[in-house]
Image 1 (tube, helix red, strand yellow):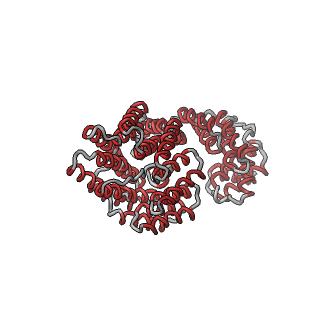
Image 2 (image 1 turned 90 degrees about the vertical axis):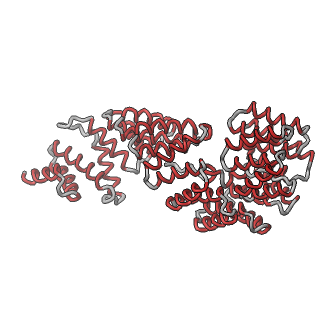
Image 3 (image 1 turned 180 degrees about the vertical axis):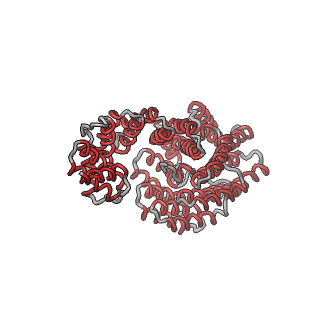
Length: 534
């Protein structure tokens, strides 16, 4: 299975946080505590604070906005949408909740409705509120479309004009340039935010994330350690170090930093969920399952259900994996289903012997995420397993048209071979010999296909040059033991060919080789006994 899964895919970790940490504007002390908890990814604590604020002051629009953002970070979009709407209903003249509602519209690709919500927020603040401007810009940046980047740029230019010393404006500008692939300007703006406020921890994270993106791991680690030097309890910096060490394949150091991240987050559910995802990615599936089950004791999250289904498949428990994923699909809104969800479900169905049903899910996965086009090969393999060779050949023809590689021609050739279309199989295998003439496999299968097209009683020897090439390559590479079966196939054909042509010397030569490797080979054993009597 292609491991396109990453921290970002599963939980929005690592570099994905460049766009989801948001801006942390300071207001009243109690709200400030909630935002600080949000900043440190202590999401359970943040929700408690925002909830308490709403009880004490139901007309506090900011608490609804930040609670909605927290639910969004917890990948609970339906709850986030409800909270933003409740904030609008409770305090219709507070602009930021319209920003939150617009962001949810963008996530659902409802751009026209998002614009209405953003326009309402701008109208209420007379387009002069820097926080509203930057948060709308952040929503467009998260959208990532060409139109979105243009909208974000206009908003941020205005925000910078209004407040040229606002650190959040510069981090958002950095995000914009990062999206536009202008890394130098992104770094300049991130560093500007730190220059304006050396205690601004998010600035250090942005710098480090940019370095990690460019595989400058030492510089990235230095930036994260600067954040830790400013505040040793700043959990996200340890998470980023964990991500960095994971990418550097220093798994023990990665694990230690992730564990530190979880501990500093006060065993926050979201932090534990991220740690479980890390264990999954490092293929520690039993440990990941244990962590997931502990999280699920406290709360039912869609992300953990997803990951549990994935882990159960990896540990070979197909029936339980299917049960968990069925529950997951019942709960998650269709627009939030990942291509990988459909991919894993297809593989779970295959594991459980439901091959024909699995194909439909592979196809849905590709439609959901075009980067999963390589799953076409899995569909082909599935058809081969079902012995639907004509269907497999159709799939592989499509694959080689798009990616004419060695392995793809091999799969295509085998599909045709098994459906007894030996002439078409021969063409595919010949492509293999052209692409990799020093590898014996293409010659072997081309020989097999040609042999099937010959008169079995009086072969013309069409396959002879290819089988001779197999013998030559394997002998030259000294890989007879490794490819013994293939070596025997080639030599036994040549022995039979020369036997029919009454060339005793060559027939004995090749048959003797076969007997030396497989003494009880029926055809060659009989052949040697017969020829030795003559």
